[in-house]
Amino acid sequence: MEKGKLFGVSVGPGDPELLTFKAVRVIEESDVVAVPNIGHKRQTAYTIAEEHLAGKQLLDCSTPMTKDRAVVEAAYERIADDLCALLDDGKNVAYLCLGDIAIYSTYIYVHDIVVARGYEAEIVPGVTSFSAVAAKLGTALCEGPERLLVAPVMASDIDEILDVPANKVFMKSGKAVHELRDKLAEHGQLEHASMVANCGLPDEKVFERFADIDDDTDYFSVVIVKDAR
Image (cartoon, rainbow, N blue to C red):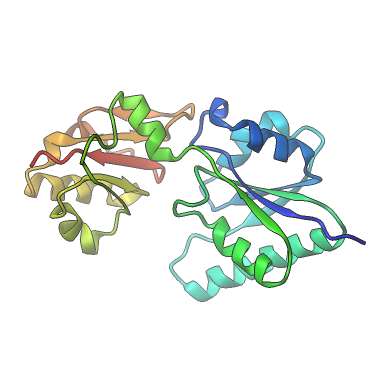
């Protein structure tokens, strides 16, 4: 029997209308749709693509949110086992991924495992969260000779990043968002920062002034800082 093919499908940041034509085609043509679940009490990627999932066989792919690499890697291996079993049955699988797979996705680890085992896999690109956030704010990420620096919020290196002369995107802000706000204030950059949480989702929040954020922040928060130097 000919083996199936794995597709890593980027579904964009939240608005279902930002799904690409290719993403929709691959999802609808696949035999099985793998749905990531990282413990945020909702399956965001599933919700975005839900209109195209009627009658589809679904595979739940749970990944624990922990810094214990051994636990996470074991979860990736388990997911890869489930995917490879479906591929061995000749089924094509579309693995949904929030945003764009090339930007801090968990899918890519599973992709590498499956490919290393000798299976065929293809990545379908999508709209990044920070591109959607910039559009929502009506601003450019970079113009002319400006540089763009994209980083997850890690308290240990915020000072180093803020010293770089570039426009900046901070992703996965979550619980560290208030510390980031304080750091921006220390560096005199707070007035040049904006944030959107859950961009394109029903509970979206837009803060044109990052200084005005409330205490109810979310993991899916993106902060854009314009370099004023």
